[in-house]
Length: 123
Image (tube, rainbow, N blue to C red; front, side, top):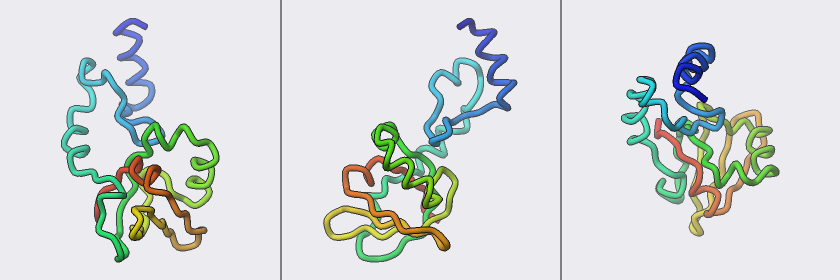
């Protein structure tokens, strides 16, 4: 795809900086788009990096490729409202797993290996 076509796609799609899963779209800096995203990414933490044993309010920002590879998990997360930009409450257990709660939805429990692949912003 030519650079001109890439630039046109960026315009038509209203200058996206992330995928629908919240991950940065590679190569945008060469097109002069998304430079402000770098600072935002620096403030993100993995669910497994949150303190355990207490509820923490966060905003979901990224579901990384590891999570995306599990179609059943993606469906469960979507059904529970756990999507990029959703505000949720999470609690890390003693084994590194994470319980995610959104009022009005079912809770979702993620094992450590999947919780590690979800990046959030503390509220």
